[in-house]
Image (cartoon, rainbow, N blue to C red):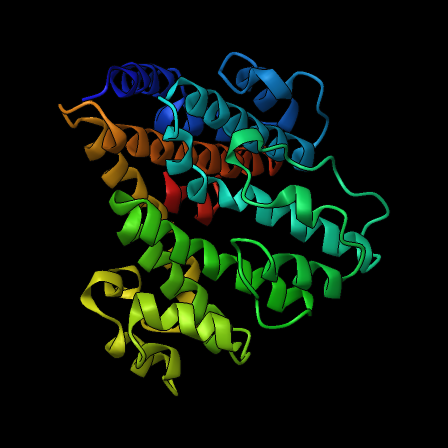
Length: 309
């Protein structure tokens, strides 16, 4: 194994070991106020961005900003070309940037937060950022590795990006293929059976690549579950109705956590260990975000946090 991958793997494990974990998140969640939670969070690696924030939305964004910073640090530790492995895994930050831009264009917020800066983990944000309308965003996406989302409504743009992210992850990051297939199944289930929306051609094409042609064409949620390939059926196996998909989401995060922990224990230092570190770090960030929401509610643990923890 390349010495650069060995060094990157060792540092990735060290980075993971500093994070709060499930027990630390539970202690944050039990805090009686968001201010108490932030004080506790300041003693963790999330301190880089949380020291000056006020309120729940800023605190949650500070957590994800810290995650992105550490993914960028991890990418810098890898040998030349190694950061390409992490680009699909960081796609959610670029999607968040586009989501924020669309909300501003719709007038749903007066000022967008500062975009996440991805550095070497960027897919195409520098070409997307100047777009001033949804139509311009669609055009910029179509000319980038994201591909055409199939429409220029906000939901079409974001759904197309999310499905493209699942497709790109499955192809470029083999250890994460099962997560990508599960994520694709959740996305299609919500679009078809919660939001009652038709799939664009590009989304249907990408879904067919990951899930087979039958599931995206299912007429009912029950048929959808039955048509999923075994590699993706696990994500909705225990959810009989579309209203329970939030539990499937929590189950997806638990699978990422468990699989990531297994990858981290791989004795052959290399890409699998690094992917495992990204998985565990990502789960920790989302668990801490849920913990902060519980603290903002007076330390009452919500269903989402219990499901994640």
